Amino acid sequence: GRFVGGVAVGAFSVSVPPYVEDIAESHLLPALANFYHVLFACGLLFGYIIGMVQNLSWLAVLCVTIPVAFFIAFIFLPESPA
Image 1 (cartoon, helix red, strand yellow):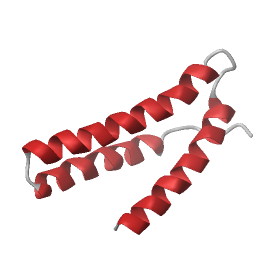
Image 2 (cartoon, helix red, strand yellow; image 1 turned 135 degrees about the vertical axis):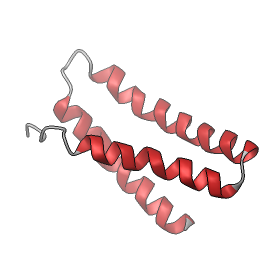
Image 3 (cartoon, one colour; image 1 turned 90 degrees about the horizontal axis):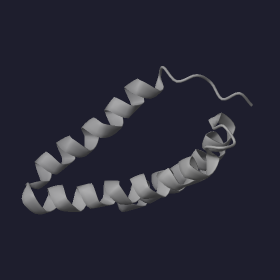
Image 4 (tube, helix red, strand yellow; image 1 turned 180 degrees about the horizontal axis):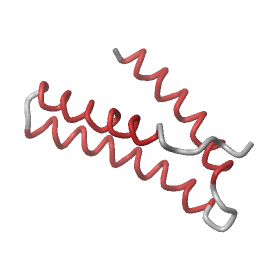
């Protein structure tokens, strides 16, 4: 699980900055580029806090709902202009 998760995070870390650069307006680019790192850290903090106060099955359910919701939302995003 750690290997697959590491590969997925590595692929995600490589693919997000070029996508943000393609879709962002030039005056918003620095802020949007920094949001990726902030939101990544917030996700780790979320996992640690929920894991501390709930059991592992609730942590798994909560951690799977957020990516599924984003997947459904990203279906409606426009294609990259490049």
